[in-house]
Length: 259
Image (tube, rainbow, N blue to C red; front, top):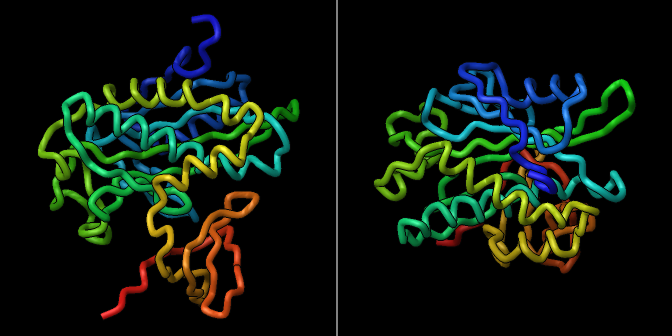
């Protein structure tokens, strides 16, 4: 196990409020980088911006991992985008093992997409302990075994599972194994944070790149063509007048369709 970062310590939990909160508490008690918490079920699973993440028992991979990126803290904003690359690779290898070809896209800033629906989500939370150690607790939720009618009404029609997408069953443990291997392989991009390579790799699978998008922030909406990412991972839209605007936080993104 020498030289291995992820998976040396795995907390296997039954029902917990949140793997994020559990692993943050472990870090505060001295837990090391690479620790992973995986739950059968979360009762208060976390999404971005305080939203809940539906995490029914045995239906998906509900997990968090502890990471200590290298380099300036100002570049740690790239960690969730790095995680998108990791998750895409893990799911892709799980599918290719069964010779299933499915396109997986990364929707800024934290969604894993399949068939234009949300397969998974990512949340990154920075934490500092009493000794001033800093880390990122990275949470991933990936839907595996739900059928459409099992999703809560408010996300039905917007979410998908691997079972619904492929009509095949995949176990959370099988995906966790692929996730650990992918994270280990791509970890050098965080040691230190290599924003140029993360950007290049993330954009290869970017949902909506080159298309006109509408971004919602607060009570306002902004429109433009998605042309890339900023120095800290912000999404960049070019308006019709040529002005380029960068957004670091949104409450939703949609394509602008023309009839």
